[in-house]
Image 1 (spheres, one colour):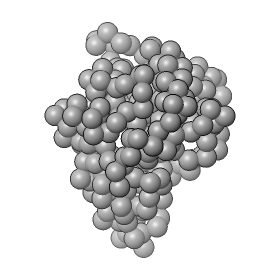
Image 2 (spheres, one colour; image 1 turned 90 degrees about the horizontal axis):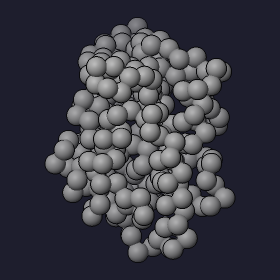
Image 3 (cartoon, one colour; image 1 turned 180 degrees about the horizontal axis):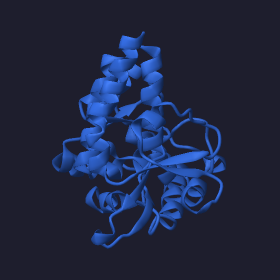
Image 4 (cartoon, helix red, strand yellow; image 1 turned 90 degrees about the vertical axis):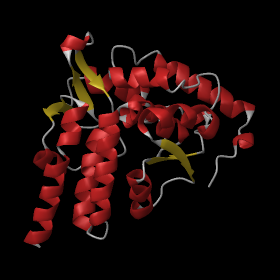
Length: 247
């Protein structure tokens, strides 16, 4: 599939700019520095819907070797993880309407690109994604293992928090999960509300923690660094292998 850029209307371009400007007003001081740096490094457009092949991939490929590829919407597990293992990030090409600004039942292009692509400039995060996807392909026919991988993906790639290193000059709890970064309400809630629990990243705990898709999360997991995320891959694989042996 290709992104048919000519399909986008003036109204859709206006909705994109509204979404972009509204969210960028909330992210300084809340988003991970890797994300904010990635916005700059990818030259992420604010005034128009990003053209994958003209705007994003020419900047992203030289940085981490990843590229954005168009998909029609939600795709199957095998296709999803095959793309990611090959360092291709699947992004849908449809955009929410003006009356869906704050909520929609499945990810659109704003979530897929604005939420995720900037962090794809971080090498350790990218290496984690590729390694996790290769593990997922090993277990793609094992329903319980895929459920566990889905939980881990949800609480990291989609709804992860990171404790920034104070020595780098940007101390504090920050967001790197694309599901939060593309949501104005959850951006504030995840960091500033007293309702959710904020737990240290722990593979065994996380793999057992169900998630919810239709309202804000009840808990978030905090990594100390993207290196920690990547270095947890052997533990993830060993846990899943133990599951298969026990069955």
